[in-house]
Length: 120
Image (cartoon, rainbow, N blue to C red):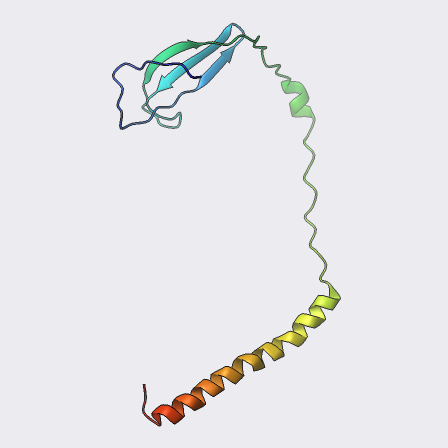
């Protein structure tokens, strides 16, 4: 791939789309100004791609594909709750609520002592 592929009238601010097309006789490199999903794109250049290995044609077996349905994915299994962790979490919720109330009430008490009944 480290070859200088020349493109006529290149636009340095715009990228290119370069697909490789493999055929039994070899490979071809085409340089386009846009991706395949763009309706209006232009082929800027086409070059033979240096390929030394044989390219075999893809074997299409449409009858076998249409008659053999695919294997459905396995059903999703929901993990069972661990009873021990459930007991711990339900006992920790009230404790954590108490731990939150203590600093809030202390902060309120100290703010009242410092500022009195003034609203800040």
